[in-house]
Image (tube, rainbow, N blue to C red; front, side, top):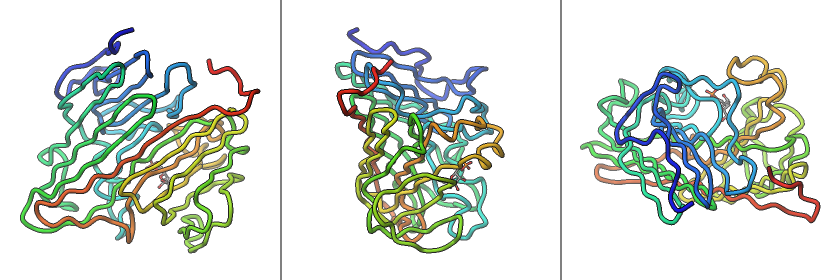
Length: 301
Ligand code: TA6
């Protein structure tokens, strides 16, 4: 195939009944991918011949007023309920807003889609600032996602951001997450500050905000592959799995789906929030690669 099979491509915030926002779905000789203008939300990616790397709930809701469960939600201009603990919607307004598609390019099967958030449609009293936010998703043998924020106003502002990446694994109970050894973290389940010793494993609900700029490797033994999340300009890494009870409590999350996913989020939150003086910009990048390992690696379907 010489160029992307792109359905639903149209410049500007197009909408359709099923998804709310028109998706870009692509399939090239290099990879498959999907992104929607609702939240500039990456919904899927896999290198050609590989199983999906980005996880999406079978119960995800696609509507203008809903956050999509799975993919790579763009959390901006705050994370959770913000540093004050009182802001809503959760994870900021960006993932609930219609972003404008400004370009799509295909370079020998590597497809780059750029979206921009208009402060005229995405803002409010909790974030009364002039800004420009651009989300660039490059679908190739690796997935690159960049969030660039510019202060286009006359006063400084601070913001939190996260690329809240849901990764697909065969069985999270057999996963080990490398790269965070020695890093301090806030355990959001207990409110306690801790220091990571060795690998991160998942044997219950995990919700941790690490202070780390290191690459993270998710070793999925059952899936016979490892997924690497590397990053630029990100001082926070969040690891989340809801486990059984929390998964059951979410209507947009299948009861047993906790086993097939883990979030490795590329972020700047809390005391790693970004402050921009007028005219300044900041660009945070998440870079995702997948490698199969071992001679017995199951054939990717
Ligand atoms: O990133 C982890 C987290 O902050 C968890 O506390 C959990 O709330 C998760 O995000 C999902 O948040 P959401 O608002 O998408 O349901």
